[in-house]
Each structure stands twice: as C-alpha cells, then as structure tokens.
Image 1 (spheres, rainbow, N blue to C red):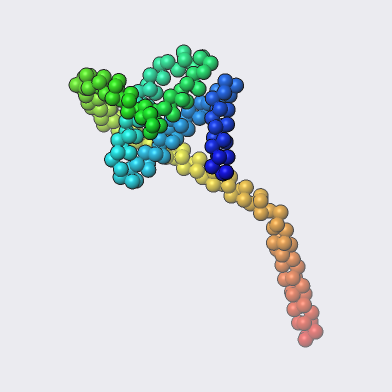
Image 2: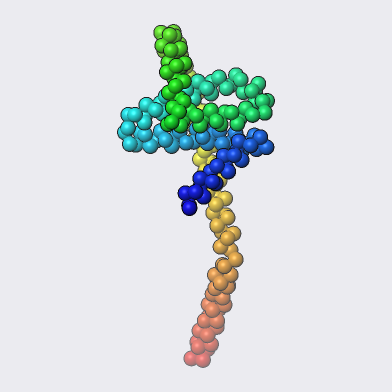
Length: 208
C-alpha cells in the first residue's frame, strides 16, 4: 500500500512538473537538480565504491552533459523563448541518466566520440597551447595573483567574522529575556556589601 502511494505520488509530481502551467522557475530548478545534483552525488558514490563500470558511466555522462552545456550557451537565448523548452530539457536530462535507455552512452558512441577522434590531434594542440599560455600568465603575474588571493582571504575572513558576530548577537538577544535574574543578582550584590559595611561600622562603635 505504501509502495502504491509513493508510486502515485511520484506520478502526480511528474505530471505536475511536466504540465504546461508549471512555472519556468520550477522546471529550471528541476533541470539543475536532475542534471547536476543527482549526477554529482552518483559520481561521488561511484568513486567511493571504486567501481570502474559506474565511474565510466558517469564520466560518459559528464562528457555529454558538458558538450550539451556548451551548445546551450549559444542557443539558450533563442530556445528559452520556446514554450516547452525546459520541459523538453528536463526529459532529455532524465533520458541521459536512465539505465534502461543509456542515453548518454548512445550519444557519446554515435555522435561525440567520432567527432573527438576525428579532431583529436587539433584539439590536443589547442589544449596544450592553452595550458602553456595559462602557465606563462600565472608565472608572469604571480605578484598580482598573490595580492588578489590576499584580498579574497581577508574578505572571506571579514565576512566570516561578521557572520559569527551576528550569530552571537542573535544568541544574546535570545537569552536576554531570561537574564533578569542575573541582573537582579548583580544589582543586589552592592546592597549586600554596603549592609555588611554598616554592620562592621556599628560593631566597631559599640566596642569603642
């Protein structure tokens, strides 16, 4: 019965998500969770389990997803105007990950792998040249990079300290209503000390 209820709930949620009336914000959030959130956790599990099959599966997925993201950078402004673009994107991302369809492996073997193999030598030169230029840039601008690093570190430390101060202030305000007894004790202590001083003075006067 519980399994039937969960299945019905999942079906209702999926129908609601894919409904044309669903907000773009909700569908885009779902695309982010399905396209990035789930694969990140699944990749983590594959690494921790040390399973070569699962690691290969998610490496292939990330290769296909990366190419899709690059293509989306140039086409998103145009395709986002389509009424069902994010709904189709959500279905596409689910299709890439489903074990029954193995969509990412299909796209990699039939489309991505042949293109990469065909232009592998040229791509290697581009990647190596880019890495060399980046290394030269880092070496030649080491002082500027260290300065920016110091600024970012100080800024992060300031933000962290401000957060800690705000948290302590909030905790202090939460404790303040119950601190009346402490304040009353603090106010009565001088009175007790003064009374003791008067008693000592009277004792000295009596003895004299």
